[in-house]
Image 1: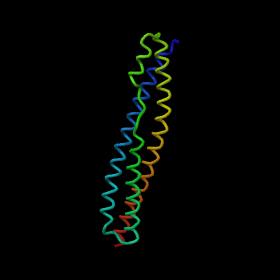
Image 2: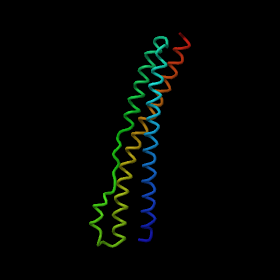
Image 3: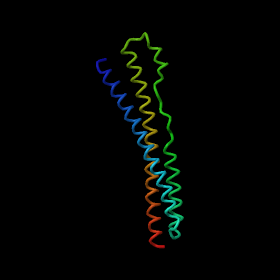
Image 4: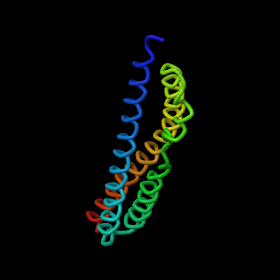
Length: 140
């Protein structure tokens, strides 16, 4: 199995990239959550119906930003399970690790897609809330 090491390294790099993407989405979700509160506070003086729309859109954006923090549980290799392969050939252990990584990468890919969709929708709602708040201020 000449490419076993390359596949294992590539799987480990992809795993690291996915973990970084998770952290990035969480950071962005926190920013959207913070700005949702700011937009709701700014909308306080806006004229109706813009104030109500800005409040609702801000609340929905905050809820989606909070929801995008979940799911957060990442599958991981349990080192205690590797003890079962202490006496196995190196290539067998590497192959088992590759299979484990492939399963984990597939599972996390779905979680990342869910988090990304929630965050995108939260950002759209936040933009609408900001626009409604600004228009409500101008109208007032």
